[in-house]
Amino acid sequence: MTFSVMITTKDRVTDLRRTLAVLRTLNPAPSEVIVTADGCTDDTVATVRYELPAARLIVNETGCGSIVSRDRMMREAQSDLVLALDDDSYPEQVDCLARIAPLFENNPKLAVAHFPQRTDEYPETLTQTDFGLARLTRSFANSGAVLRRAAYLELPGFVPKFFHMYEEPDYGLQCVGAGYEVLYTPGVTIRHHYSGQARNELRNHHRHSRNEFWSMLLRCPFPQCVALICYRIYSQFSYACKRGAGWAIREPIWWFQALMGGSFCLLQRRVIPWGRYRIWLNLP
Image: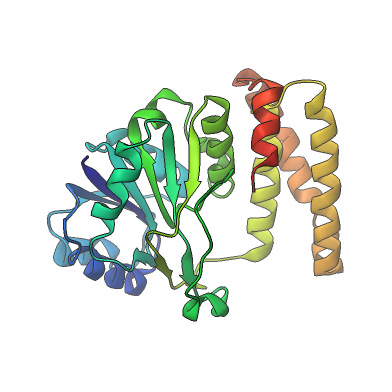
């Protein structure tokens, strides 16, 4: 099976340079590498052209968001499988593509394979050796996952309106709803440096919560949808309260944003039967 690698990046050229250096060592090499510079104002474009001249470079002069960028790369990739990375993440095994290919060759229902990450966000993982057994999951991280492109094109795929956050669980739901599988497997490990640059915890919480709300409107059948939405609003507000008064008083920001996108979700609504939705909810 053939492989593409896709990376979306915004103003983290130092991290990206390190990731590109690793990609040059992969054996076997991917058929193509696609990099989207999403509204970059640093030396990202020049760096990609110098460090990996064979890469296909997409330049968004104005930032469109990581989800728009990934959706475009998924649709324009030329390979069977697409390895999704962040600009600050890369596989630790040079033969990772050879290890991954049999998973998809032997299981036509496998839509996504994702891998344990050694990440600075959780320092204990940097020296961890046992990452557990392979298991089906309901989500994954685009900082280290392989997606079957044919399955992606069959499904709605990432929702561009999300802009950033929650595209992975929503796509995992689409996969399970269609009878595909999302598999966590420790056969490959990802080194994720988890750059703190261009990250805002509160903003990401709002986007995650808003997009989760939209996902339920898009996919969950009635009347279960009403109960789930109420529960998730409560749980997200509880989380915000634990982070402090500054978070709690700003929680209505995403409520308003979510309601503003409600008509879009209802127009694009593509319900997943409750039986399949419940299977997804019960996955880890």
